[in-house]
Image (tube, rainbow, N blue to C red; front, side, top):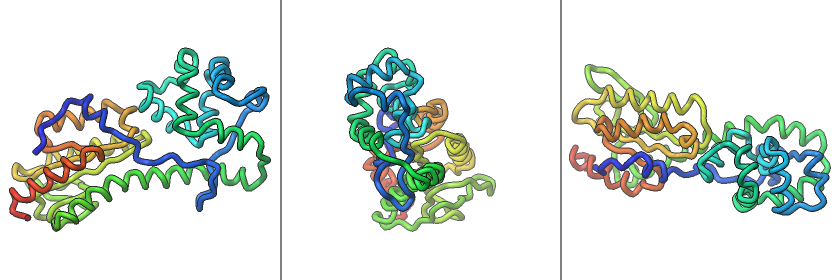
Length: 279
């Protein structure tokens, strides 16, 4: 199995699981929230220098720019942590306004979207679409989590392994624990995998840590326990991520991977399967 890497090295491999969605594009879920304030509309021109001056003057209004490009405050914070190492938009606006606005435009197409939305008239349908935004976000969050599960399942299937997904496995003294993939099945588990991908933060991350800890506690000596953990949401919950990493560093679990290191996951999964004569 792959030797544990340092926590910071692992942290650097975390990536965004959900792509940015143009909030003006028509989708089955509807357009994302569009909003601009009177002070933005009153700017003589819309370009990076004027917006940098605007955020420096109104640092607490930075989340409005997030809304313009379709980011909730939580997603904005996580994106800032990913790029700047801090979610404090007020401090960034006061000390690094030019960099902040340039990042908004480079990563999220701020200038074009702001021009487009400031010149648009809004009606009743737009209000209803905005109110539906939280449901749209929740659906996309679920898709991001399933992406990690889908990736590990595809690798297991490509290797020709017998497996089950989203089930429980039996370990020490007949105790069971949850897992996202088990080889070959829960009753005769030889390899168990947790797949935990989150671009947002919340109680689900704590639940994920608890599940992986439970897997480590229940495992039999012959059972391999592996975790695939990714998403920029973990960057705002580093203490939780560190707890999982400590399980790996102390050999309570056998591997920890991100989508960027799935090549290692595949190699280690195949090695474990051959050791247990499943291939």
